[in-house]
Length: 275
Image (tube, rainbow, N blue to C red; front, top):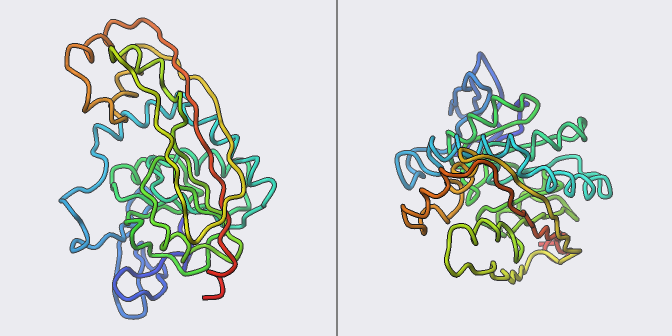
């Protein structure tokens, strides 16, 4: 559900207000609301391709995997952090099919959740599933959101744009960064590769945020051949694995692999808030 003034016009920066199934700014720029409820705020001249982001096939894979509870332990861990800090507004930048927004909204019904992604196919699926969240197609490089309006920004397995996230973050705002931990999906790697490697530690240093804590979230993903074909298609492994090894997935009756997320929690630095 998109409220008036929640998003900004990507052309002039003025607030967008709803009227007759569309969103319009005071300068007359108009954006139609899709049937599923989202709004597309990615102008054609800012696209790097005809259909940027994940394609339909990858999104279908994501929907299948997320419906199996792949991110459930992660959603629960983020929920505990939100219970501690109580953000009034949350942005999931690069939200994909909107699983985290949908799950967190159930536990925090009074919190305003916003999901953005550059993939129209992803946002369409997200909007269909979670009607209480505001979804928009846009790039995280240039978010059509007011400065200082977001209490917590989530970026899970998506590109980080620190300057832009800091801009939309409120004073003392949180930034939650999710990356794969060392052993994330290692059992799957053992199945696919002769010499599997652990995930390398992504040692990120931000200039506009100060670290608060790091949590390791462990879980389990189990399924049949179709489930694991979907899982592999939504990871980089699909593009780095030979066809004969991918074919091995079709012979699975049931398989279980480990998930391990690294949840890094940051707070917006006070010196940046004064600038």
